[in-house]
Length: 208
Image 1 (cartoon, rainbow, N blue to C red):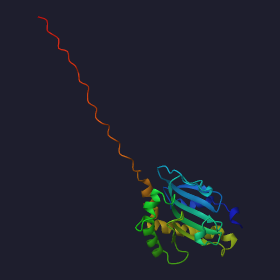
Image 2 (cartoon, rainbow, N blue to C red; image 1 turned 180 degrees about the vertical axis):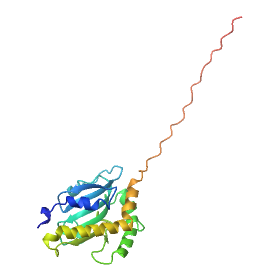
Image 3 (cartoon, rainbow, N blue to C red; image 1 turned 180 degrees about the horizontal axis):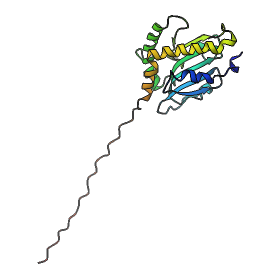
Image 4 (cartoon, one colour; image 1 turned 30 degrees about the horizontal axis):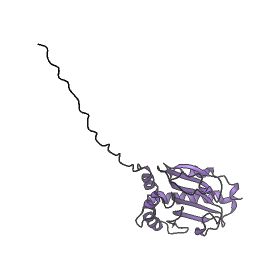
């Protein structure tokens, strides 16, 4: 049984109870196959290169991906052995304003979560942090040792276990809270006060 022949619709139903508040969007093709769980973020990004593989993502978003990694070129830094089951948390675009606040700093939400979740998960595959990649906080594992007939069963268990750890770490709740914050808007400029025109009053002589 090959991964392209597998249905991925069931992934949405498995992940949604753990990722409440995030909108599922299918990733039907490319090196990733599965579902994005998105929280779009207000604001415009100009001059951003849009990869065809990320065409389903809003210009700015944060959330999670749950599904399969089918090739070695989509995420070469992972040193993957595809096909792989993969779950990751992300902030898009990398280097954007939200990414610089939630991922990049040494005391960021993602880095603090990484330290805690590594302590939670003692057996492999363990979570990895890539602060300069879309797969910022990721857990992945090769499906090659699995019997093909068990792909869905074993990947289902992998997804549930991984998502439960993400919930327990607090990342799901905190990331939702961060994306629900209202964007900072510029303060309205005060209009300069205009001098009121002088009112010319005409005094009328009373008739005697």
